[in-house]
Length: 392
Image 1 (cartoon, helix red, strand yellow):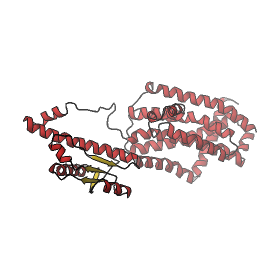
Image 2 (cartoon, one colour):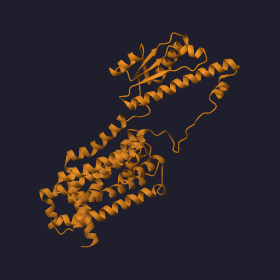
Image 3 (cartoon, helix red, strand yellow):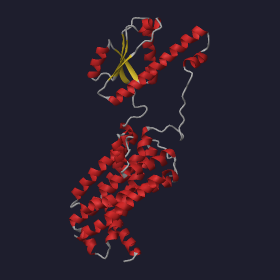
Image 4 (cartoon, helix red, strand yellow):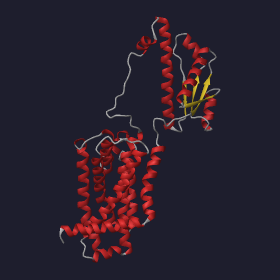
């Protein structure tokens, strides 16, 4: 059988699988809803810069002096203007502690009784921030905001005092109090959010899940119901069956990947900084790197259920270890070694570089080489095993 016949038979099988998908209305609906649900959940559940809004924070002023009262007023004004916090009057630390336990407050601020006296005597005053350690993420976010606000208020006070003492204007006083300032300059236009970071990973993960869950159904399902036997007795080569199934699952994965990309751009405002066709090529390459693994597991599994369970066992670690949701650099060293042995890591890294940083082929050459190597090696192992499995 020539190469032309092999390709023609492969396209027939792929067309049959895609027709089966088209006729299954529920499968078509889930083809669209699955990436939609995933994008919406990630886009609105995971924290962003504006994740904290109108958080209830207790404010206890234990100081009887005018400076404590003025500080409390200024903090209330800043919180109202920013919309990040809603300050609630409290009697002290114990009251804030109990109300945090009751779920009424997210944290608190305590102005100690010696606040005014310390400032009037030229001693540094202390402001206590009370945090809810049962919710570390919100606690750290709230601590960071409160610390920044309180330090800024201290800077304003120092500038005002210095202006009066030295007889200079506020700009000169600011240069004395804060001689250095920091400006952040990104390497791409705009201000990418957390969702810009996670969207490329979701695309790669969706393609992976589509291929690795679709192949067990495409092969094991037909094996169980006997339709695969009809293909085996037909004048069709084993390679044509593999290629046909692969083309069908590749098409399905690309459709879902493009749906994720469209949702990211249209709903969440993600900007594609790089070349769109390079992005499309990376999606195809991502499918290629996972197909061999899918064929291998499907070939050795006895039935569809076993194959699906094996796929899930591999997919879940890859989802969390490949840098889709969390930077690999934050993981322990031994987990980083595991992460860099997974193909999804390189697919995610390449897509992220192209989408966010506008990288070209040269900048992602390492990822390209590794993904191609993964695909070739896994297919070289999987195809002979699949052929032997079809003879049983």
